[in-house]
Image (cartoon, rainbow, N blue to C red; front, top):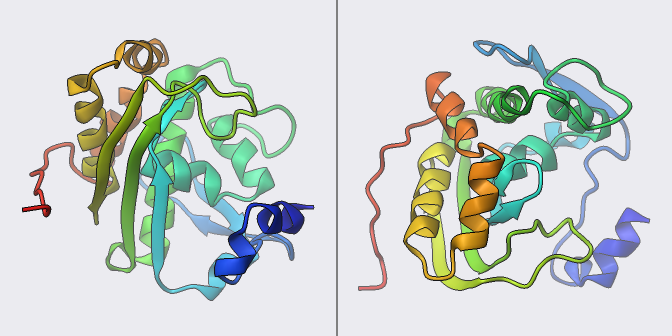
Length: 212
């Protein structure tokens, strides 16, 4: 079914499609955090030495916003790995709902740290596309129409700096009221606070415009 969805959306016409957990999952260690002691990814993740993380930056009902860290933290996790992150390391099956908002936001950052440490920071680049920025995630079947339409494309080797730059650009954008409200209501910035605290990256950055 997943492969059919990929074909329906045109992905198989432009690239090889690999469903990473179709043959099981593997665990990679996570150290230095407070929520997770491992990350759980599809076994096919072992086949890749270099990664391009392409994310559509937008709002998110649970995380406040979804960028590079959210895309890796949930997108690369296997099915049980997704539950493990959503539940802040308390379980690997059952509901993804968790009653401690900050704990699950911290788990997001820790999953990406474990992924980074296993793969090697020099083997990952992160790209965030900031267009059609809805308050809702692309995973929502009926997302709200975007209030912010096109800011640009940002890239970095540091996912924390990248997501922080995107957040800052949202605060500067016209029509940002609903998205800012969503980010603040979910305390979304805490993901980046914790990510910096555990050494995933820096919230300080220099924004370089390459259009000139």
